[in-house]
Amino acid sequence: MEIQLWREILNPYELAVKEVTTKFENLVKEHRNKGLYCPIERVEGRVKTISSILDKCQKKKIALEDLEVRMRDLAGIRIICQFVEDIDKVVEIIHNREDMEVLQERDYIREMKTSGYRSYHMIIYYTVFTLEGPKRLHMEVQIRTMAMNFWATVEHSLQYKYKRNIPDHIKERLLNAANAIIMLDNEMSSVRSEIMDAQLSLRNQASIVSDILNNIQNLYRVANKREIVKIQDEFYRVYSLNDIDQLERFEKQLDIIAEGYRAQDISMEMDVP
Ligand code: 0O2
Image (cartoon, rainbow, N blue to C red):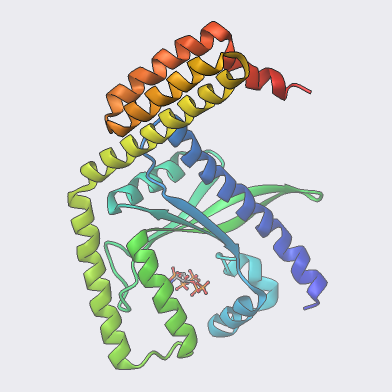
């Protein structure tokens, strides 16, 4: 097939990967902005490379004219979660979306592959809009924990190195590692709520500090120097107490001072062209 034709075929898949990645990333952002825990840690996306497509066509005896019907992972999204429990939540999110239609699901988490591979796979339909009009295409979504992802990435490199013929002694090691990863994920699940609390409060603290610094910076333009220095010193004092309630109280007091000076509006007014 001519390179030009490959590009024409793969372009809509690239668009689909970009759109779906952005949609999931935005979901993460929305959760964080609202101070909510997000079951998605990060999102990756790729269009299968031409050499990988040719390899798979050969292996699965797929004729090039059947490519788009039979190779359903030309577009692929990988959703990485922190905890195993998050995976079911992501699956539910995908089922509830109106822009994605689930065609097939494979649960390699409850039923691990003989290689030790674990991941939740979904094939979905997704529609992109191109010059030629709407195009409904297949997309593979792989959902797994960070630990499962680590294993799969390492094993994938070994598959490549040994041309899918990994020696038995390495296969055995990989299976041991896969079992260790099941244990690791289980251990992490047992302290999930502790970890989630810690992460939320860390993010909350970061957002309070950024709000305070924003206000101090704006006040620099309007308040007198001595007052600013006092506020700054007070901020360092409160910060060093390592007490989120005190920091929150300081943030509110500073909001009132800034409101008095209309300092909060300054940056917005300055942004207007
Ligand atoms: P690549 O290079 O990652 O794209 P189907 O795709 O449905 O026609 P298949 O391949 O049996 O048939 O589907 P399956 O088993 O759901 O696997 C699809 C993808 O999952 C694979 O794509 C891999 O990305 C991943 N995967 C499946 N099994 C393993 C495994 O044992 N180890 C690792 N590391 N990844 C695995 P490709 O096209 O095989 O490869």
